[in-house]
Image (tube, rainbow, N blue to C red; front, side):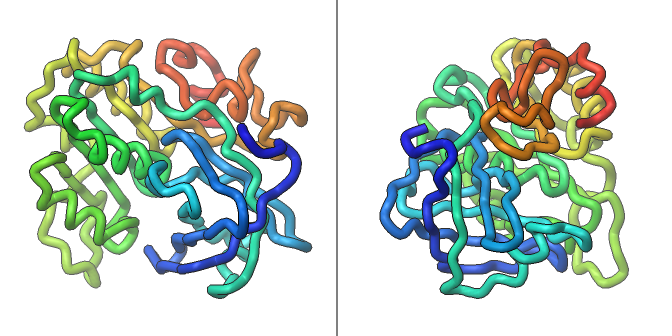
Length: 279
């Protein structure tokens, strides 16, 4: 990273978007520094008097003067709750970018299948925006997105645009249709979206992010479609504290999620107990 690992950059809250009752997207504009990152990398965001926590970067890497992060508020969250209390004009600290990111340049000429569950969509949004910005470099680009209910979906405006775009196949589903939801789309687990897909398995790379409970079922569906373990990429969450491989909170056997990840090929992690149990 270009900036010092331990010194936060100052960023101003430029915009706050309510995504769901528990998630907000913050646009953070840097006071002086430019911020260059690869899709899939993360940053540490700090609030004076509260602490800091890791968040995936959800904006386009083409924008260097600001980033977007989508934050789920937890009742006991020492950082997420204060973040949700911020107003436009407030300031935060940002350390990063950190981690390895998705090697999208290596996927040139291939079909890309993005599978995102719930709050996993923010971790792949930067990749989707990059793929659309470099659309001629790739073959078919497909997004499968599942959420608990229609109200729990993030980036609803993006999803509408992507469904209408000729550059990406966007398929959505919800686990259940709530009474208050105005939803006439697909209902069922995210794995049910695989059934109608025509996939050229040997020429397809899958990017998979979501709750750990969905991983074995999505892997099985990908394998059924002919996608190899070496062509499946995951972005993992972990209990990160420092972000630079010093504290050891995010270790998986001999790997640090903050340094060696958060992006891993499936064949690198499929046998790790920490991955199978959900870190």
